[in-house]
Amino acid sequence: MPEPSAPALSWFKSSYSGGSGTECVECARMADGTLVRDSKHGRGPVVAVRGQAWQVFIGALRNLRCED
Image (cartoon, rainbow, N blue to C red; front, side):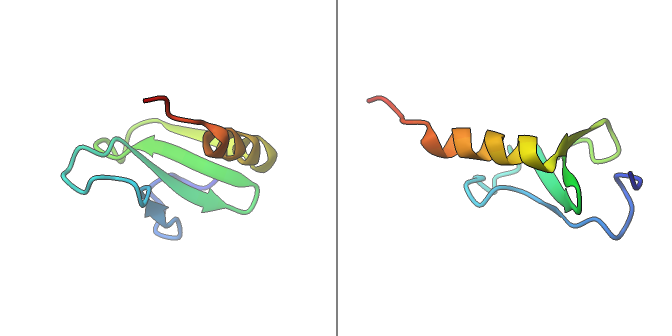
C-alpha cells in the first residue's frame, strides 16, 4: 500500500459534505480498494478497505431510509 500522503492519491470528501470545515472523513480510491482518513488529520491513521467490502458498505448506505 502506498503512503497515505503520497501525491498520487486523490483524496476527496463526500458531495454531501457541508463545506463549512466540519467534514470529518475523506477517501482515496486505489486499484484494490479505498482508503479512509479523518480530514482534519491528513497525516494521521488511515483505514484501508478492500474493494468488495467497500461496495457492500456503500450499498448499505444507499439502502438506508431516514425516518421522520
